[in-house]
Amino acid sequence: MDRLGGLWGSLPLAFLLLLGAAFNSAPGANAWSKEGHMITCKIAQSLLEPEAKEAVYHLLPGYVKGDLSALCVWPDQIRHWHKYSWTSPLHFIDTPDDACSFTYSRDCHDQHGVKDMCVAGAVKNFTSQLLHYREGTADRRYNMTEALLFLSHFMGDIHQPMHVGFTTDEGGNTIELRWFRHKSNLHHVWDREIIQTALADYYEKDVDQLLQDIERNYTDGIWSSDVSSWQHCSDISKCVTSWAKESIQIACKWGYNGVEAGETLADDYFNSRMPYVMKRIAQGGVRLAMILNQVFGSSEEGFAAAT
Ligand SMILES: [Zn+2]
Image (cartoon, rainbow, N blue to C red; front, side, top):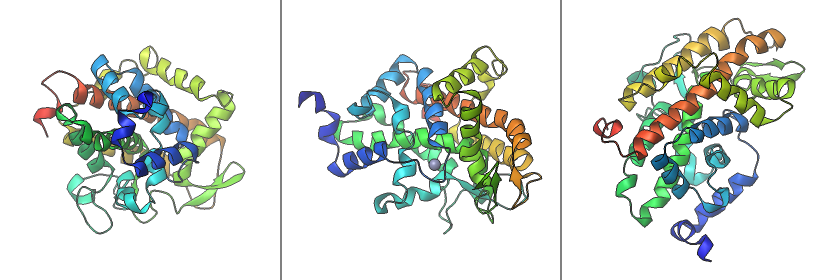
């Protein structure tokens, strides 16, 4: 029992069951694929400084053995559960059709107009919650664990370009088409198909090989001189806005542009869009690490003053 004490003892049974169910079930339908989220979180965890590394380890349930990526897809798996239905609008942003822009005050709300209920608001909110971690007592850990998992997941989603898409087509979900020989839709092409095709064609379906390739690209490859600018962020409110803007701009230029419902997307689309998908996964991971290092680090600077 000792080994299971601590965290288990402080969590309601329902939460444990949820985590268990999430760990064993299939990935959700409308999100970066399981692989996209896992790679984002693996990148982030590899870039954590000692204090953040320890806090993350402390917050994760013991059975994942300190592996954040094992639970990064959890928010997709519970979003339709009654208890968590409020989280459903937090995975995306609907922007005005063809505007190709994001304005927080205009666009960050749910379908009923409730402010801040979008992925940009969620990243802000869960970052603020985690800032209280260091004041925490045992009974706060339940909320802090969830906040960590939600933040880690939503940092993936805000970087998936079609998660900041047009309103009428639900971020490409209603644009049905074919991906090579099977039926899909434009949202899924960016969530899953491009990653799955890359894994199959170039990485022997091995996620770790793809992860290593992405890591090489930002350590000493094509993105290495850009990484420090990716991490620049002193005000989380401004940062979430600029990350969402990046996404809608990529969605417009490379997601929607020239795509017609009913057509077949294949090699040309795959080859030209894959670099954007991989870069967004890398940026999500690098920026998630940046947030966690600021939130859990000992420095007095950072978001603490801004929230
Ligand atoms: Zn999601």
